[in-house]
Image (cartoon, rainbow, N blue to C red; front, top):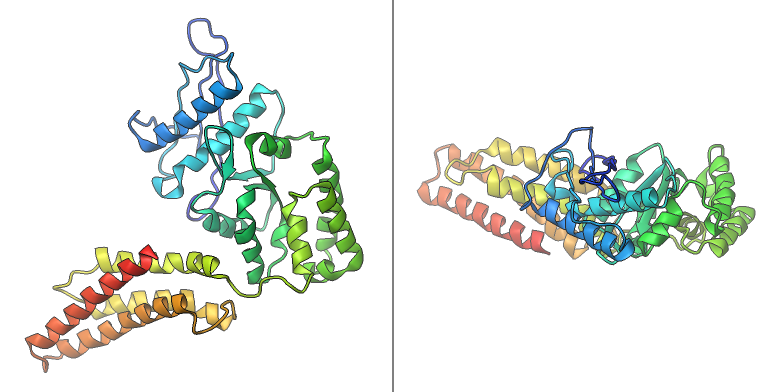
Length: 360
């Protein structure tokens, strides 16, 4: 996913080489624009090496010496864990080689190693947030280790996340392929059919009400018996159990606060000249960041207003306003040079603190 939306990835498989047989050229495409990466580019290297290792281990009869990987740049940047592109490309390759069509509504959010094992990408929380914001849905495949952060999505009080998206987990590429194909005949197919009736009911009835309904809970339990990796059923059972998370745990809170801390750090390191401190800039960033973190308390998404991590962030954001007021006082002309020096010291001190906070 990108910082604001998911990215579509397509591949084009064409014969290549002198004999035009058993050779693949792989084109991940974003918005149908190609960008040929130099062979030294980290994106090119990480994706190509992973895919070639996978193909070598899974399809020994398929020559891989002529594989070329072209990655579209710009829309999917280096900030978005580029290696995450390898997993959907690997999934589509396997589907193509096995001649098994994929579901048109499948989304795949995972990293893959050269053995085909799946894990969560570094930006998994950001990705889950993007999916939560979408009104349309489909089948979302995540790695099994995403469970804890996925359950934290219930803190927002929107269990409809798990009916819009039928979330399922996989540990390996083979498991993901079984979940992604269009005509699966296994246990997940039956589980998905039963889940569809709950999605239909959710169009007319509150998910919160459905999650506590005994008949619905019985159906959800049966879905889990058929498919223990059906995370949507698991989350809806948790929602109606009276034990759903009401506040962010420390890991989720850190991820929620991370964008705020990054913005503050970027402002202090890149947008401010210590010799020409301008009060308006400090007020503007202060107000923006308070608009991001104040709702956490207002909506009671924290376990305590005295949470140390939250207080660290809040106090540093408040200091932006403190520096703004100090700049205004010194600009009036009734303060000597030493007063302006003190303001700069406060600025550099906050700059150091924001770096430390970002490292946490």
